[in-house]
Length: 204
Ligand code: MD5
Ligand code: FE
Image (tube, rainbow, N blue to C red; front, side):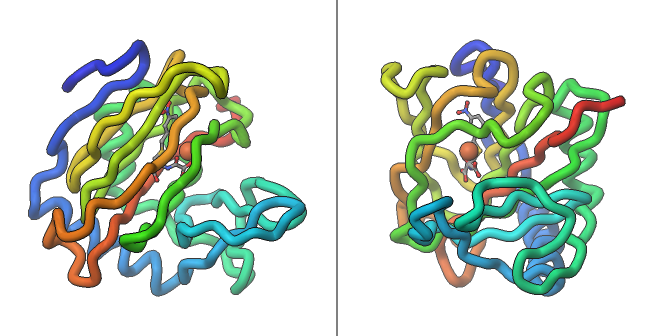
């Protein structure tokens, strides 16, 4: 493990290839129950370039009304499927936080998709970290400080890498500059999948 900043810990290659394959099979089952949707920006309605779905008791959605967590899929109305046990076990191993994750946001990047610099602050609990798992093509990931104008750094995130964003990194600005096509053979269709495990409510 490598501490890149206070609170930002990278576990390069934390998941072996066979674990990535097994996780991908579990994510395919999540997709079958909860098809990826394209969120739109609040107010403007501009679509994200990333498609998304969720598993867990709560899922993150965005539409013209705003960003929020909700228990059901915005298109099908069904409850989100459960978070695969393999991911719960990963959280237990790396999060350093007793309560389990409540949401797992699944982001699908095609080779041209990116995610602009933003903070994740739709959760009521900022004491819990966010745990990120990357699958498929490598991306160039960018992070800065807690103010938008703070200097930023970037580093590559490859398939099987796990990052824990806690402490002062929990509210750091971050984004995905670009996908590096053809850098992984995990996904036959190419592109990148990112999973983020999140605590949404404060544990009682
Ligand atoms: C991704 N997803 O690669 C990233 C990984 C998102 C999102 O940004 O909101 O879906 S999560 C990265 C993250 C979370 C919290 C703090 C920091 C990064 N950070 O301090 O850099 O699709
Ligand atoms: Fe984010």
